[in-house]
Image: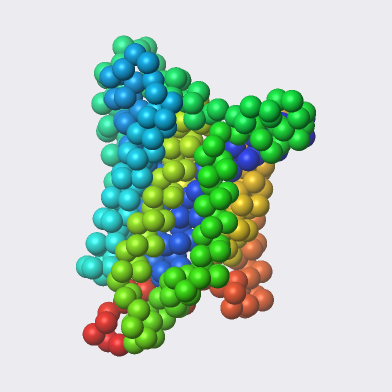
Length: 325
């Protein structure tokens, strides 16, 4: 039972890990991107569209292409959303909060529009698309996992995107803390004026970090559909996972390595009501609120302790005007 709960928690937390890692990279450049839910949605529908068109075009799927095509489509779609955000907030210096919220609304609308269009192409009685063949490839487990008992179930029973999420988070943590690129990015987020005076290309770092962060967040949407939801796309089927990703950024105090554990905890809080017998609907809703409550507590504690390393970048949410330097 415990192994099953942990397994479900990891699967539930993986989209959150992708989203939070991408958002941390964006926020380290000084930009608060509240468009993550919409970006994850666009990443998912882009991957679904690529997989759908590939499945329709061939009778025998090539495993490599069945994974490669949705991945590329997802990355292109989510990076394009990040580029839109950058153009509005970095180049045009639009309000970051308003732009992010507009991007979320736009992304969900785009996903529902193209999702609904694809559903009409399928002769089905339910409003969804099933990409079960592609999903099986995405969910392929390590061959020897079944022979290792509970250890295999807990550590080796997942599709490859789960391990990609963990690796990306660890690499992001290393880059931010141990490399010159990470140092420059953090300096841009803390004081773009000082970074600019030191010869760092502030605009380039903001664009690159936001677009890469958006691409990573988009993979969370692709994972949810292709792995967690068994390849089934249905409009408005994401719930609040995009917002939980943003909450996880605060919970992990802007550290991608901590977001790995945080995502599992959030996933645990999300799935544990399923294993409580005779639970009422109201009690289940209270459990679903717990990740946000925990995030608020972490925010209060870090504010009281006022440690520099646990605070957001100093210029987070503020537009940079070079002329005022």
